Length: 156
Image (cartoon, rainbow, N blue to C red; front, side, top):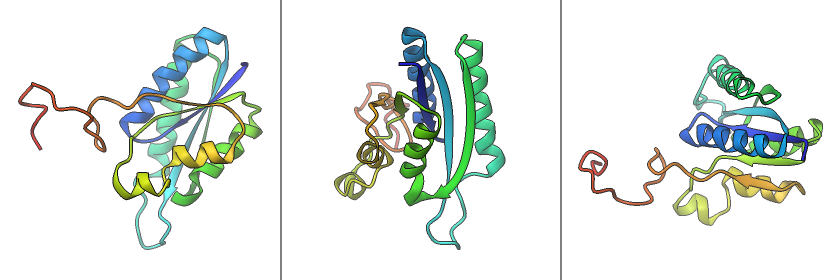
């Protein structure tokens, strides 16, 4: 494995995926292409979750962190409708001649999970490359996998 595509997002899962990809790249001696697909809303009247400048900053920060760890890295930011994010990830993995894809996990619940509309599921269906999914953070904005004994973590 010579090259990994690391697909990051603006959520905690993107940071977990960065650490996971760095460990994987170090263990196999791979270089990393960092990709952040900034989601545009499907409907033009709905504003995007983040600006292009913020998205590019995340890519630059990830590349910097990987470089500091001694890992060869380059970065790209794209903008696409939310329903095309997985296609861009698969496309960029081919363009960058990657051997595997690393994604974060937000652990969707409810109708999004049941319908298979998560980016992770769509990436897996649209590529023949191995897809490594970094574990979800213990507490994030989307999923609470367990209830801690700490009163501050149990507030809703």
